[in-house]
Image (tube, rainbow over all chains, first blue to last red; front, side):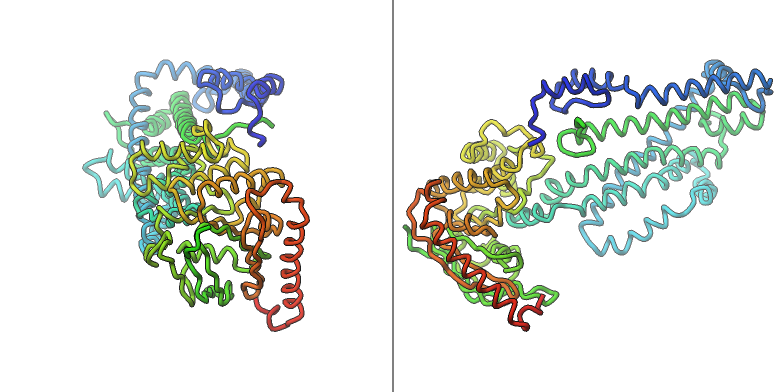
Length: 298
Length: 271
């Protein structure tokens, strides 16, 4: 019954209690306003202040100690390089992003389909799951050169395969777990009403597995990026298809350390953006029913 | 009252794979439109009876014979969705679906068009007093309301046999007695056959025409008490001397069985 509290009261609590949030029934616009207001909380302000302090200390240290830029550039120089080298870095960013996205989508689709296959037959799961684990435990750095040799005519495909290998397992493993975590009473109910395999999958197993699948996606999004970066390092491809990792590699050869920092910064931002996007998708899809996406007052 | 037989349990028993005797040699004839409660402590096999009748679990020995007028003329139709409905202990709603979609589910599974399913579901929600709640999600409802949705989902197929497995066990006393009354009202309108499992003696006596008392280790029937009181039953009946007397009688059967259970070492060592 605790959920039945009137919205007016809830809103008032949200105003007086920073960090508290409205119930999700509120309109979409109201939700976004609340979302923005939520940013002005100690949880957000504190790390931002720490970050700014850190950057100031860094800049101050570099200036006072007169560090040579090839050892440690200050944040202002990095920012300047980022703007200056944007024509080089931006296409590279797109290349890395493309590898990451293609590998990630392939991992999501295949992970979901194979997990469904696993739950249709215990024997298929028993026979193949251990090999999926092996795929996960093999270090990507160790097999990336092999994959690149095998696919030497298509480096882009090779890098996608590398990123895919890293991103695939969390989705497969999470989704399999989800598809098998269905409420027993609901399974009985479907049996009672003579639901066929297909109906049980569509109306029961897939919705029940959704939070697990989305959790897998959140892990794999970052992993796909890491896989892409590792593959680029190993491949070391230049020219038109040079990704951010290649820029880092080249910058380090040429002692262009500010550019290295700028590229590194972009990779980090990319990773964070991927995570935020996937979290938002997850919250959007689960907002009506799953505990992870339901905001409550304390 | 209709005298035709809905089904009879012919010396049925159920032994689980681990050797536990969940139910031993149960014999019971259920007439159409009867309200029968199975009451007993946990482990007495009362839920097992429902699962066996619903076809969710296989008999070890014995047979279930369906009457001519029964919802299920042949054992193969024991899971016929049109005629038999099950209400689970927890409301067992799909948390990702709205109230309306939850109630629609049985019809959707049987291939009915979305439109007719929704009309029937609205009607069922109206019956249980939840008209206007169709677009809410289960988590927005209280325990009692969730159970009402669960009952609406059972009623949407217009069943003639309703199996209820401790439906109100997790609810507070006030909600429980409200739902008891509403269930009786509905039963008097619709006249389904009801098999109602509970561990609450008062609830069993208040609702039923017959109370089957069961005891554990092994699960078995120890008494069949007919509650001879007219319907509609009101709050006055709940506190009446007749009601109390029946409760004492059922209670006496239970404690007698438990006593024997404690003394007899061959029985108490099992399970």
